[in-house]
Length: 308
Image 1 (tube, one colour):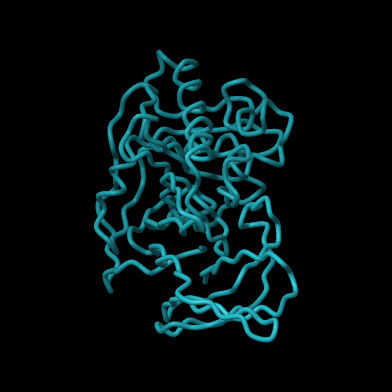
Image 2 (spheres, helix red, strand yellow; image 1 turned 90 degrees about the vertical axis):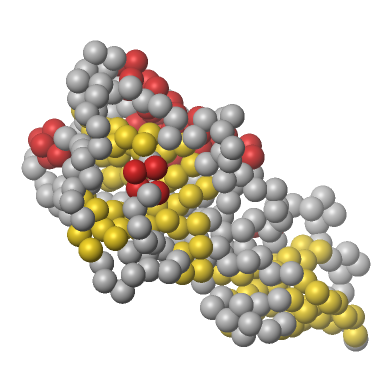
């Protein structure tokens, strides 16, 4: 369920020529990657880095320097340093009619294990991300710069949109509640780039990690491709036994993951993330394994969760 598997990467990391992108007015389009900075009581500074495909095409293991944003504008907004209460996030999304529908968001929490969203949840990602880009485009339609510094209480600001018009500031790090994980980080920091597609699977597979950004207090930003992980294949329950009031389930495993058994007696089938852990965790071996639940419940439903 919380599924990650390493991508192949080159043994040698190369610093390529700076990724400069295109220079044009702030004209947001679906798939554009937004770089947003904020600090309570200060302006938000948001940059359009151009199409996210510029990063998707970077070879695995290669590092590029990201320079197509106004670093000076950003540093001026925060007393020339980013290591004093500043938060940064990156985000992009296709349009609703794209195939496949995809969102790309950062996470600065190295322990988070994002899952693929439902279709309705994915639409919330799209709505929040596109709102920032579209509203800033409307505000800066005659700007020749892909960067803008704006008061955090302005209607078009990243902070205002992600806080639900200023009513829920604690939701800003979660893209206004779209994400179940923190998308921001405080420089100096490393942020993984997560790819999210709608999923109907139950339990939900883990999201794919495409690479990672590194940013320091002086605003030097790089992206390294292929340093993250791809999802673990969801575990399949292959057998069940009941003996002396103990239910034993057999399931598939991978050697690079951990597993635990979730159970619920809720006849209304509550969301899996609300089920109780009834056994585990255990380390996968690559061979089928079993976990048991001693229960007297008349009804019990189960799922096997895989994670790292």
